[in-house]
Image (cartoon, rainbow, N blue to C red; front, side):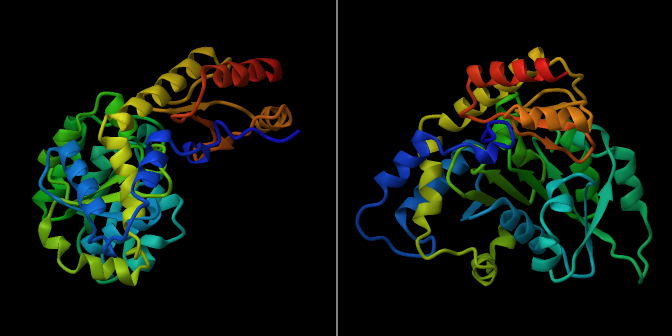
Length: 336
């Protein structure tokens, strides 16, 4: 029996019709290279319109590259980025922030359901500068979080304000920003939060591999293309990274598909016979499940990962169907 990966990750889903159609539509004629073409300019305008913000926009191939290069722009090699201990930059990027940042460190902070605890952040920021420890110089936030919870603008402001008060940079990892927006987070509020660099996720939202790096602090944009080129993230045919964003943004498909993914997660949470560990606010469901039961689930034909906190994660996507949700829930009931 071949395993079904419907719920393994939103990365396992195909690309949306809107994204693929945009790729095909813009695969005609000749265009200037390295992001200087009209397709990239149009996609950047649509990202700015989505955020209602005047910012520089670049398109790269992966969330890891987007995050790591962004953090490298905010920190010097002997400094550190404060982030949730289970943030993607801390657990799933193979040291990429330190690699691209020539040694920058990560200060891992606790917090329930993927949200940084304010007291822990204050303690990290209050630590004295000493020669033998990398001092914090930036803050990295994730919305929606790794546990499918969603920060409100007010919750983010409570974390960004102390960072900016100390003159630190702020990075927002929005790999699932569309899902946060579909859950009620106001994307236009980001410009009021003193975020310096934002990553707008494309891949998890249903596009072929592409992420948008949005640079609110235009001073950071100076020589940013050179930084991307050195990192292997300034493709000659840049229009093919940009085009999917046109397809997903020009008629609201990005948020429409994210809302569907969120709804499927809610449907799954409502039917699962297992205890749900974290609030279901975006497109992820995390349940309590021991290892023998997880193996029985795999044997029944459905694949899901054990996550960082020991729970088992079910991630819905734009392509998740109600039939698939009902099918995996039937399997869950049979193996319990």
